[in-house]
Image 1 (tube, one colour):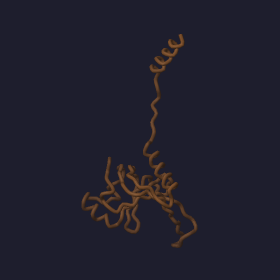
Image 2 (cartoon, rainbow, N blue to C red):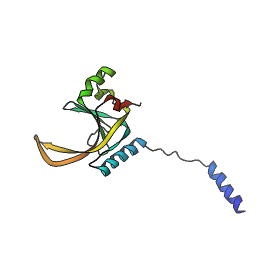
Image 3 (cartoon, rainbow, N blue to C red):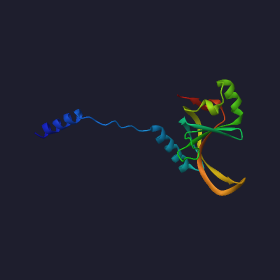
Image 4 (cartoon, helix red, strand yellow):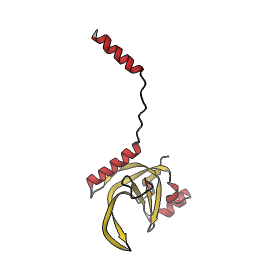
Length: 147
């Protein structure tokens, strides 16, 4: 009798509808990388990372690709492309990296590292700062588009 009840419950539960559960693995993996860099600071973590690029910026010749539209967002990982690569990249792909990678998912190999970013006011450094997670790219072989 026990087995009949157990089998009936299993059969009926298999016939019931289940709700679809979705998760955003991109955010989970990005937050995992950020947490690991915080735990390893001041050292970084080496690996290959898949990142959706939503925004870019350019400062002192370095192109920054960001996983969030606000580069100061705690959930952001920044990919920093060295200035010496910009011309080679543009020749190879016909477009500058700051526009080419927008709304694409990339795979980047390197070291993700927690960086202290100082805040300036009126051209002078203040005591205020925040942290970003950066992956520096010094070779075209380190970065590719997945989708």
